[in-house]
Image (cartoon, rainbow, N blue to C red; front, side, top):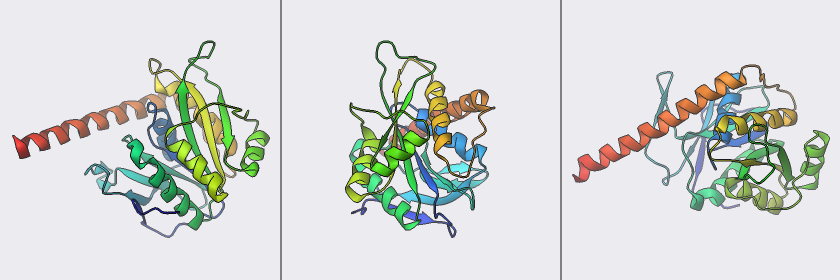
Length: 246
């Protein structure tokens, strides 16, 4: 797999054997990112690697006094889960190369499964507040794992974005990738979809359990924080551009 567009830098030795990798970049809305950051906070994960690309915006996220890359990976020894997150939407033209980089890194870490979620426009008869999540597996083993967890398989339709690239590359290279597909409505808060994603992810984690008791309150706080950071980045880039070219 060619992953020349991206570099993943590890900050510490990673014990990833058997771990599940959750890709939680914003896509159609912020539901995946909300779910990813909730897992990070709930399982007390810390930044273990940075994803770098010349195509990313020149932004540093300051958290607990430390600078963080705009795209990064969180984990913790013995947690058996790692989460790829960003506050910002990855441009579509970078999805394929990013998917290859994530899968290549996951293979080197001897991870057992990569999970990604994808939203599709809501249809008639679909629940806004309790969307059903269905699964797509890149391999027969992944499809068996989804069924064993009680997750209905997505029989036919279209998956787009980074999840699609991960699924396709997973099939091509015989890497276990689980795509979680759910209907989303842009007029409905992302926290509803995030809740559904988290409940489904929890079924697929081998040795970690996500405490969902604080989900409603914490997910809303995460959504507010994500939106505020995205606004700050847009305003900062606008001011920088004006001062340079104004």
